[in-house]
Every structure is written in structure tokens, then in C-alpha cells.
Amino acid sequence: MYFLQNSEIPDNFKAQGIQQAREKLRYERMPDIEKQAYRRHIKNKRVEMAVLETAEQKGIREGVKQTAKNFKALGVSVEIIIQATGLTQEEIEKL
Image (cartoon, rainbow, N blue to C red; front, side):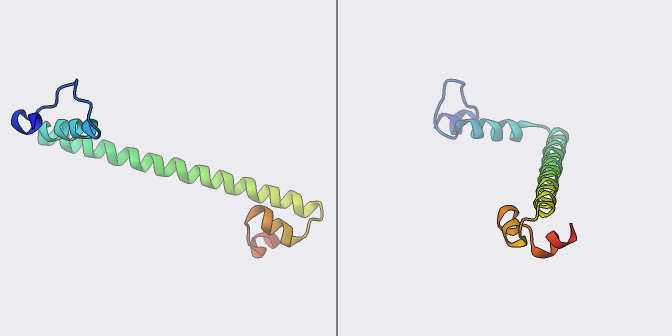
């Protein structure tokens, strides 16, 4: 009720979700130019996280392929390599 009457949330309020409400209120009070900058910042952060995640997945994938190469060099059967790495038979045969 306090929030609806006063359009502010005191720091001593601790209800669940109150921090999200504070952030939303802070955003809504921003001038339009600041809102645009904030949205660009959030979009850039999301892109950055996606790039990092993709790079991590690619790195993991390359590690898996190297492991499969090592197994293949040791004479491990393709079926076991598939089970151990999750690679397809075609991917293993290309190594």
C-alpha cells in the first residue's frame, strides 16, 4: 500500500520481490534518454553473455573431439567413443 500511495519503496521493506519492484520503479523514473541507454546496456550484456556461452560451448566441443581422437588412436571402438563423447559416428570418422 505504501508504494502505491507514495511511489517509493523504503529501504527497510523486505518483502519477497521488493528488490525487483525497486528496480522497476527506478527504471520508470528515468528520463527517456536514460531508458534508451539502459536498454542498450542490457542488450549489450545479453549479447556479451551469448558470445561467451558460445565460445565456452565451442571450447568444450573441441575438447570432446580431441578426446575422441585420442580414443580412436588407442583403438577404442567407435561405439564406445560415441557413448563416451556423444559425438556421431560421422563426426568420429572425420577425425
